[in-house]
Length: 308
Ligand SMILES: Cc1ncc(COP(=O)(O)O)c(C=O)c1O
Image 1 (cartoon, rainbow, N blue to C red):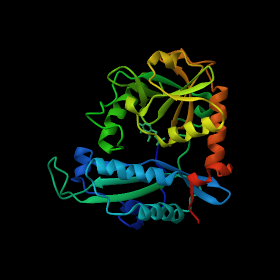
Image 2: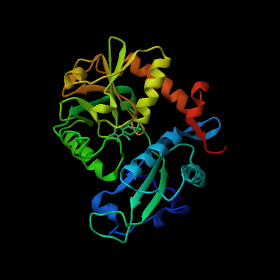
Image 3: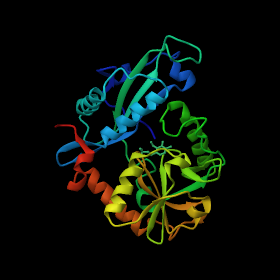
């Protein structure tokens, strides 16, 4: 999806013009994938723009950085303020937010420890990641022939830029085969996640999703949906799923910051359930979007209001 150009990007503590937010071609991260990042959304609410679960996203950013021995030269509070500032400076009511911490220019060779650390927070308006109509009609997916990174090769707990080349392989394979998205299995054959989404199924009214130990990202939307589903009275189970569990589900859907809650209508050319968004998925979408818009008081603590 093309990026919509806005005015400013927060870079190393300052708001700079969009076109000035640049790094050198010899930056360590460009060569070795030594960056960590987050994907966050801000939603329009009656009290102005509000960032969805900002604290959890920034904490995950710090955990990703720690894993790679990257010391972020800003505090969590400074990045919270930077996120609010860059949304305000661009006059956005809702947007996607991309904090990025990367090993910069000055050192070559695999050892990153002496390379400087650069930090940016970019924002731009971004619609439904898998298409507006996908939120209702659902997407067609393929089980990837590419296995998800083994956790002892590249840890699923980190959102590191270089790790995403695994997702890129799966995504491109699925697109070239005519599908919308891929789901990767781990080496044991259990479902992990999509190229940028967690996966859920609904069977006999029970909501199921792979455990983090399967090797999927500890998704923040996944966590939100588990809470919302339980609060709606559904039983939620974190348990291993095999590919046929997706084929035979009554409903299946993706969760993710970009994809929000997107129904899955076909897996490997097998129609899932009725072949369109099911009632549980619809109910969860309703609860999720009410919460993100600040319309459900129970989840107000998940919102950081930009104008407060
Ligand atoms: C591989 C992968 N799985 C799952 C997710 C969903 O995570 P979240 O809900 O925190 O955006 C993402 C997106 O960040 C992802 O890249």
